[in-house]
Image 1 (cartoon, rainbow, N blue to C red):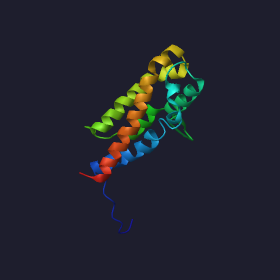
Image 2: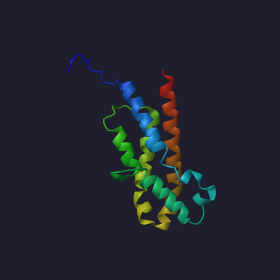
Image 3: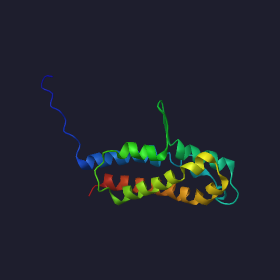
Image 4: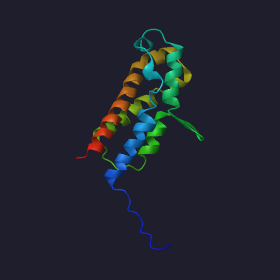
Amino acid sequence: MGNRVPSPAPSDGARVREVVAALKHDLGKYVAWRSVNLPPEAWEGPLDPVWLENVRADVLATRSGPGGAQAAWEVFATHAEGLAEPWPAELRSVADAVAVLRGAEMCLRTGDEASLMACRGAIRSAQQTIRGQLAALHRRLLEGP
């Protein structure tokens, strides 16, 4: 007890910066951790099993820990939970891109070749959006108003 003064709750701006920093690391870094290094040819033409292995790891197991693996949308939901809206435009773009990845969940899990070939461009675009928008938002928030 004593004379300890409780620290104030973080302001909304501080909370947003904290969430964005965590998302940039836990989601932005790992949502394309392995697949970002694939050659452009892996994203076109016949389906490459290496592509599938890497994208599955990035999207379906974006974050791993003692509690198991979390998919990209679970990582996003965990960090964004309780974050007051309206969100910055960049974070809204990230949410939309995460929804694209969530929409690709079944084709990634089943490995249906036709579905995967149809959605892999959207997956790549969503990964790039997530990484780019989180980096841009994080940079903007650090620079201040």
